Structure formats: C-alpha cells, structure tokens
Picture (cartoon, rainbow, N blue to C red):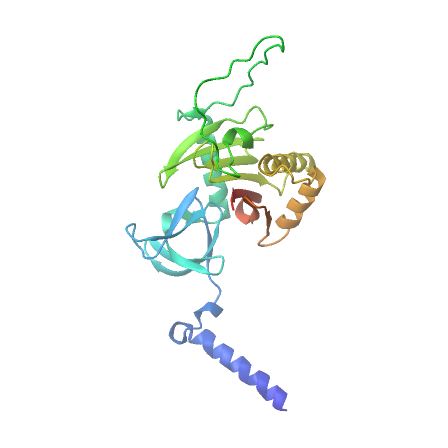
Amino acid sequence: MVRLKFWADRFFVGLFCVLMASLSGCDYLLPKEKVYVTVAILNLREKPTTKSQVVERLQRGRELEIFERANPWLRVRADGKTEGWVHGNYVGDAAAVRAALQKDLARRSSSTRKKRPRPTTRPTQPATEPQETPATQVTPLSPGALSIDGMIAGMPDDLILEEVDPLEGQPRYFGATGSGQVVLEFWGPEADLLRSEIMVTTLDISDADLNRNADLVRLFIRNAVPQWQRDTTWVANFLRELSSQDVGTGGFDTRSKTVRFRFIKPLSAIRVTIEKA
C-alpha cells in the first residue's frame, strides 16, 4: 500500500510539472521541436544579436532543440547541453539540410572561385646525374603537422579543392568526389592544417559505394595517422554501426592528433574530423 502511494505521488508530481512547465521550471520535460543546421557553419551566440559573443560554431547537420522564439532568432540547445541563440533562417528539417548541401555541391561545380591545383609528381632524375638542392630555406613544420597535399594523397583524380570564405582569418578549402557522396574540408594554412574533415554517405547506398566510401575514410585517416592499421572491411562495419544509432560517435587519440567520428543524421553520413591534440 505504501509502495502504491509512493508511485501515485510521483505520477501526480510529474503531471503537475508538465502542466505548470512554464511557471515551475520543469519545461525540460516537454518535447521540443528539433531542427538542424543547414549552412556549412552557423554561429551559436549568447544573445539574439549578431553583435553578441559566439558560444560555439555549429556545422551543417547539427541537431538543435528549440526552447524559445524571438523572431527571427531561436534559443536552442545543442547536444543536450550547450545553449545559445541562432538565426532562424539557417536551420530547417532534414530535407532542408540535404538540399543545402546539394546546392553547395552544384555551385562548386560551376564556381569561378579559386581552385587549388592537385600536387604533381616531378620526374626523378637518373642516378648518374647530380641532384640539385634548392638554396631556399625551408621552415620546419610543427610536430604532428598535417598538410593538404599529405591528406589528399591517393584520393580520386576528380577531387578538386575550392578555396572558400575564411573563418576567423583562417583559410578554408572544400571539395567533393564520389558523385557528392564524399566531401572534404580543410581549415588553416595548407602546410600546417588546424583541422581536416571527410564526410561520407553511409545509408541508402549500394554496398559497393559504402565500401568505396569506407576505403576513402581509411585512406584519409592513414594519411594523418600512418600507424592506424584498420582495413576497409573493419571501417565499413564501423560506419554501419555508427549509422544505426540515433547519435553515433566514436574516435581515438594519438600523441599529436585526435580523430573523431560523428553520425550526421539528416545527411545519412559520417563525418570524420582530425585535429591537433
């Protein structure tokens, strides 16, 4: 009897919180409308104004819960913890996220922006001929440095990187291959990147496409972390596993780098981010 009364009391307390959410502070119990970031990068701000401090920079596909509307601004929570304000013009449903990405890919194919040429391999001189050493001084790279040339080594020939608008003074590059199923982004100086990313489609595609995408992920990580010895089959299975979860994440750390996997639900894709540790 006491146990029954205990559960009855809990039921009525919960019901009261739901009914009085706006007054009692129990609003977290109510289901929230969810939206996704549609642009490549969206600022999450402390207050609903562009002059307010940036709390975090959100990437395309990030899921947000809406808590308040102050047209056109929205007070949102990212990943159930970070709160702030975003402009409502740059969020939408899953279909809007996919449409925005396809629009960016189409714009890239006809863009007149600066294209970054792929590195070319210089012919090796015969061993009988002396090798000339350039007299120019080379600045040594920082430990664990990543370069664009190193990261795209072995990538398909149709990959062409486009220089896009810088962020916080840092150059950025964007490219795609595999009919848009594989998207690459690089942040920072070409020879000493701050961050490298590859995003690959993992759902609603053929096994052949998934294996190709998995192999490019394997290559991308190996270019940054040569000691990483996973094969394509392992990577494909891991991508499938993450994609079967509502919020699929994973990763590992080395002495100089961090590697993170994240399932981007509205794009049915996995984003792999490599940064300096």
